[in-house]
Image 1 (cartoon, rainbow, N blue to C red):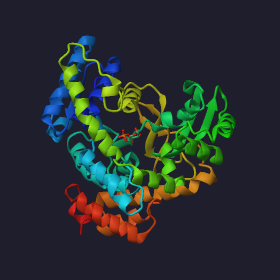
Image 2: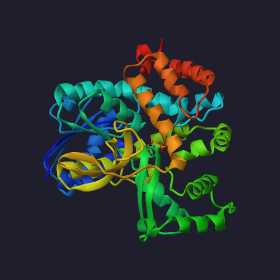
Image 3: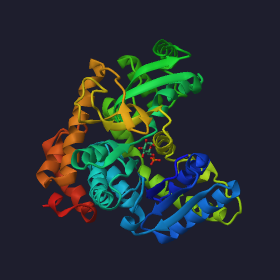
Length: 432
Ligand code: G6P
């Protein structure tokens, strides 16, 4: 088993207790390893450590957890770095989700102007993290969950030799959800999705080895006017049947832009506010459980459930224990998707072993869905470069190329308002 040192940046976040559950669940695969929790908030770090230490002790595992607020010290001599943080927290996300709505543009965590500003903030921090990695653990492998994972990965892989891959559970559930929605068993689905993160389509979709699309088509024809199904599920089924492939849920923001914009404008709160209303109870629950000898996290009172960031831990296991496993990954394309550029970070299937990640040859995206993915991919590249080293003009150019914006006046006005609102998280060059 791999004895490694893992730094977890975001180790005091609301998702961190769930991530520690995932780790401890796979503890046997990492015996003798150390996990360094790195975050800004000492109190939360201490609480996550207390929870983790108790869970480890109950299971008799040989794992060590330490904490620090000094990132560079925590990173020293690490083999793996897990990054999952949200610069500006949910308050900043609330601005991302609400400001664009005033301009008639969808506000969303990873899409449109919201995702764009999240990218600018996340990459500003990632640039510092990567400088630390280059200085104190240049051979470490970085497993990133910080959103928008595709743009963050695009920025790093074009600007640093550090080993970097991004992960998202989306491709493991987007396709399978369709089976569940039509009353079938999701575990009998086999789905492979390719494209971009939050922008992928299935190129393999079988149920018990048979093509799933006729089953979906039949079910949709019978239920397309069934008002007991939520509108968003019906829309996604409609999109899947029309395109002949299963979409990432996030495509609804593009193919049903008008409906979703009206729904978001009519909703009294943003998603960030909905989450913020629950955060105090999550921490209350974590505090209560940390007092017990055998802490048990209740998925209903834990952010995101209790098996957070599991895919990154699976990926670490596959690489450091040389398992030779196929998992969804976000890495430079290198021919995996034949009609996207070779150096573009794509979401695809990767083969993971001690050599790292080899993207598998998955063929092309079909023409009926390719155009939008290409636009999003060019936007991804422009945004990554603007965030890493560009000027305000580069950034406005990138925002104007986003398919949810596509208006220069709107791009300029939204940029000015959002850049001012997020000024303390952005480098000076993006403000002038
Ligand atoms: C999924 C996506 C993540 C995203 C999250 C939002 O897990 O893959 O990228 O951050 O949903 O969930 P939330 O509860 O924050 O709205």
